[in-house]
Image 1 (cartoon, helix red, strand yellow):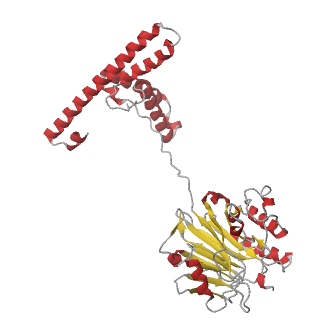
Image 2: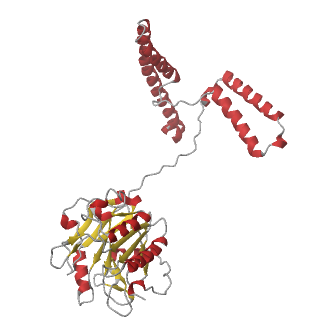
Image 3: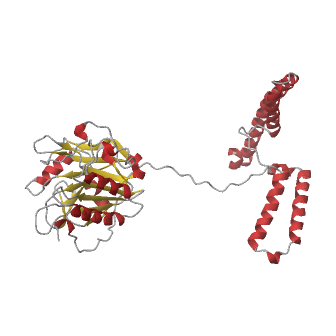
Length: 425
């Protein structure tokens, strides 16, 4: 069996309890780096030294060339998980998690020497990151398709609510010529042209509703390209970070790019994405409740009319055969009878914006509004409009003065009776 097809026959580790969560509403930086090799003495120290200069949270690593699978902790306290071949120092992928986020790791699942995934406890959504290392151009198309099949199996197992990030050294070129054809999947800031492997990458991204994040920002060429040929003549973008399209607005495009200043002796540049989740605030609309003008019931005549009409409607309901109706239907009919009568006799409560504004003044305001339209067409309404306006102004002053006097009396009575509710009302 070829190396790129190897799977490790062990179950997915159980979820471990996490003491902390990543708040995705704050900025989180995720990256990928083909380090070429971490076998040499001191390479891990070189890696952490370079990354400590930058603000990072989780970095996916490709071509580590470590054998087997395992977990270790660096001298700086960062957690390093890896997955490689069991017998040779080739390929290999892994994750370097910043020491401040070690407790956020729910599980890390090594799949093969080309695939590894990690799940992080976060709020409001957990984060699943898949780090992969695609076959190079020396492999045939069959090996590439087998790699994509493996990757698709891993993507299918990711919980639907998780923020999914797929970052890979794809060894594929996506160009600006694909921007119009694959709009919504890639940006315009990439290579000049798309090759056959790049076309296959776009198909995978489109199928999974993924977006190539590091093709969105307008940067200078050195911050777009991710690979450099040994002779320095060719510079291409072949490392990509992909995130779900629904989180497109969460990508900080100015800080999502390659970082050529970071160096570990590799022909690939570090690529990082800064993510900050923006969620629309959903306000739940509560049940609408009609407020009636119950103060009208203080008038004995209005109260008598209301009582008579409600009684008449209840009498009509009593005639109906209650055996043919369930209890819910009867309750709804009673409620309808009461609310319809209240709406007809009492009307809706019209709370004034100012507590001293009375219903009479509001009615005068309605009349003034009607006269305003009439006075433009008929001059005889001009004087009436002025009179109503004068009554409103005078009524406002008198109503406010009366309201203040009543309020003072209520407060004074509350003080005399030691009634705190009356004093503050």
